[in-house]
Image 1 (cartoon, rainbow, N blue to C red):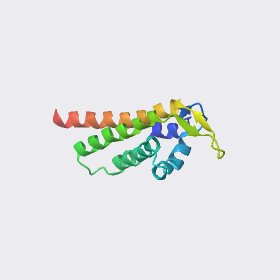
Image 2 (image 1 turned 30 degrees about the vertical axis):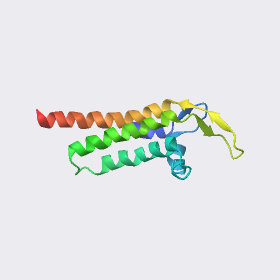
Image 3 (image 1 turned 90 degrees about the horizontal axis):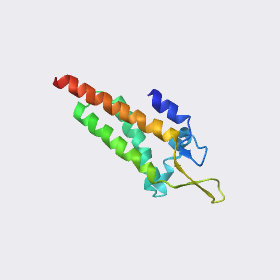
Image 4 (image 1 turned 60 degrees about the vertical axis):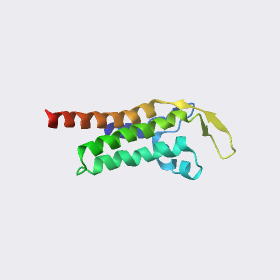
Length: 122
C-alpha cells in the first residue's frame, strides 16, 4: 500500500508532469474513448484493491488476480501520447517513475502471496 500511495504523488510519465492521482481519477475516460492503453491499466487498480480487501478468497485465486493485475498494468507501456490541453495538442510520453512504483506495488503483493503459498505447502 505504501508503494501505491507513493505512486499517486509521483509523475506517471516522462514527457509530462501528470501525477498518478490524476491517472486514477481520469482513467475511466479510456473506457468511453475506447482506448485500451488507458482503460485496461485503470481496471488493474480495481483488481489490486479487490485483492487486498477480499481476504477470504482462495490463495490460488488471489495469486491469479495478482498476475492479471500485473498484465493489465503493463498495457500502459503502449501509451505513446497524452492530451496536453483542451486544444487537442498531445505530448509524447514514455512510462516514468510513478509507473515503476505503481507496478512495483503489484509485484510486491504477488511475491507476498507466493511466499504465503510456499509457507503453506512446506
